[in-house]
Image 1 (cartoon, rainbow, N blue to C red):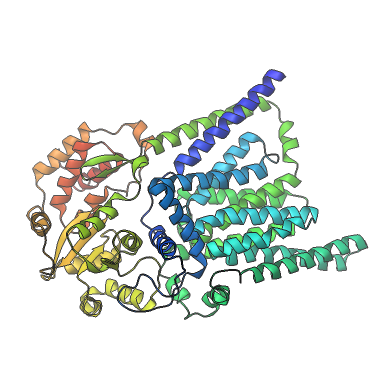
Image 2: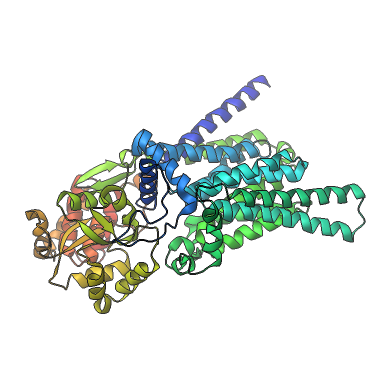
Length: 611
């Protein structure tokens, strides 16, 4: 018996560390080219000036517009402080440690409610569910605060102890200053719990119940109502005072305040995530929902709070994709709380061949984690004719290289850019480079002008170019709207292509800048290699065969058929097929990455007769 207990304890420790290693590596990614950069820029400005912005500190021209991010200042300061102390590598480590903490909170809460092996599997499902919102920006902290709110509210609902409620105003005040999620998710959770308590109180009136139950129900309603008022009042505790307190109300109740509803339809994360129904890749959302709803269906105790939580979070997620984290966490806690009432652990301990079942589960978990960690550890990127390991990349090398190329060659001024690039342009190049869009959507007029120009460049580009004095364009050929502009500029003699780097293409106004020879002759080089020859295809096929990707590599480094090597894809979409083929040939000479083979397959499938 002692040997069995010692073995079980050792297994638990091993898999706890193994899972922790997986979580660390899974989130130890290069810093994305997204909103994180304008948040870092904002945090840097706040710390350098020791004050908060009230007007736009990164204007595109010389306009003066109100600052529109009142409730994210502390999140920006936290992220920048990490970079200031530990650099960009420290920010990558911070993200990994943060998610270990977030998963650890869930794991600790569920530890005695689920068998350990099943808890590991369940935690992995949750990890995949929250990974969709793992971008380094203030809303990542929602993962932490939503859990703390749920744990304290569930504990209060079970025990009636007020100390669990007393901590909520402190948490929500901090949350409100980090991200607007304090207002959206924090108040939603409080409202759900008081709604449930109120309905249960009404139910007691319609059936014979003793006075103690009614007194207890009344007390819970009063406590929750009071705590909601205190939490709402705590929003005044922000550096912007009344202005900061009223900000979320204005955002959601006054459509023209910052144009929230106008912008929503142009931002992918604010749209309905119907894509999850078209791909098996998002299976974990369905599994979590089935587990949560299954527990509610099988549970003899009719828990109204859990039903409302699951219904509300599911509707919120189906309406707006960015609510995926809220949905995932709610599903997880609904399942954990519901399974506790079913006494699942007792059922599990009575299973025949329990030890065999557990060892089989441990073996499956170990195999899965080994495959995942091997894949993560070996992820590589092809950049400037070199294969780079993703573990050592601080950020996307392509976007950084494009920005540094512009600054290094004194190509400065207003830039009509891809939205995802603007924040990093603020971080590395402002005010020399002034991005037209930077992820903040702080000017509806400018964003609308961009949308119209990209949709119909032939009719609208010239007016936008003159109005905003655009002389530099950095866009992504793989985005259809942005490719419209790039295709239009390729027909205009006043513009020239000076670089294609990864998924980014750079055009500048001809004659406006003194260009070095390699940039000035770049477009001419591409035109001289616009078409490929049969010999190029033979070379490509021979190299592909020589650089055969094994079945093990395909398992360790899975790539969808439509995922191709980005440099090649950009050149191909811009019409320079010959240069694209040469690029793939050079890439195959350097390495045998599956994504490069996908690019080769893409070309060769169009010419099946090539032997």
